[in-house]
Image 1 (spheres, helix red, strand yellow):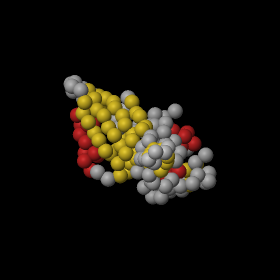
Image 2: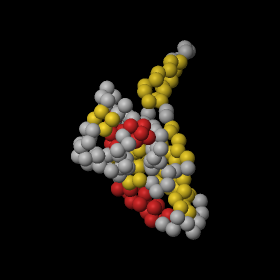
Image 3: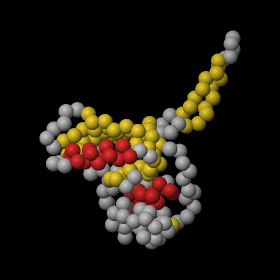
Image 4: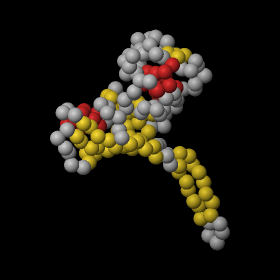
Length: 171
C-alpha cells in the first residue's frame, strides 16, 4: 500500500501528524417554558474541527514549519486530504509551535475548520477529471477516502500529480 501524506491546497506534509482528532458537534437549543417543561431542538450539525499535532524532524525541520506557516498566512479555503479519511473542504484556522524546539525537531499543533460544501453524488463508477485535477480533488468531490482511490487506480504514481484527463475508477 502506498503511504499517502496529509495535504492542504497542494502543500503536503513531510511527515504525517502523530495525532488527528475530528470534533463533531450539533446545534442544540433548549427552550424553557415558564412553569412547564423545556423543549429541545436539534438545528443541525456545526462545521467539524480537524485538530492534530505532530513533529517535524530532520535538518530542514525549520523550513518545513516555515512552509506550513506560509500556507497558514496565505488564507483562503481548499481541499484538506488526510490519510485514511474522506477529504474535506476547509480553512486553516490555527498553527501553533509547541514545546522547546530541538536541534532537528519541532513540535506543532494545527486546527482546520470544515466548510460545509456539497459533495457530488456517488452514482458514477468512473470520472474524467478536469485538466490539472489530482486524485485528491477527485477524493473530495466524490467523498471517497484517498487510500481507496489509490488502490483502485494503480496507474497513478502519486495522488498529488495532475491526472491529465485520464479516467479514474471510483469503485
